[in-house]
Amino acid sequence: MGTVDDYLAGLEPADREAIARVYAIARAEVPDAEQGLGYGMPALLHRGKPLVSVMRAKKHIGVYPFSPDAVSAVADAVAAVSQTGLDKGTIRFQPEHPLPDDVLRALVIARKEQIEG
Image (cartoon, rainbow, N blue to C red; front, top):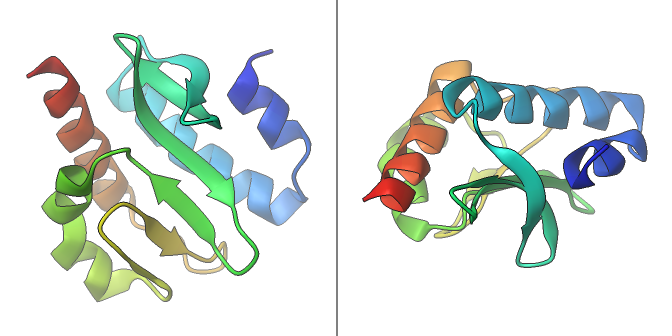
């Protein structure tokens, strides 16, 4: 098990399902991503750099791509669908209102391209 798997194991079922889904999409886009830590959070890493972390906060689930530019790349799409919102470094959602797959893919791809660029 890795840091992401360990984190998922400790979550309530609804949160686990919602968070695991985001990680599964990220892994599909970046198959060589490894589990590790990004700024102390369980995360997927690409080329040794944090790609994305997804964590339960008190009032939402946060998606942290470790890049305001990656968030900006999908800001309009997130604003159209998110029940919770976003700021320059975080996208927030509720398990009952998940982010669309295409938005998550675009976010992960934007971050991957930054790391590779």
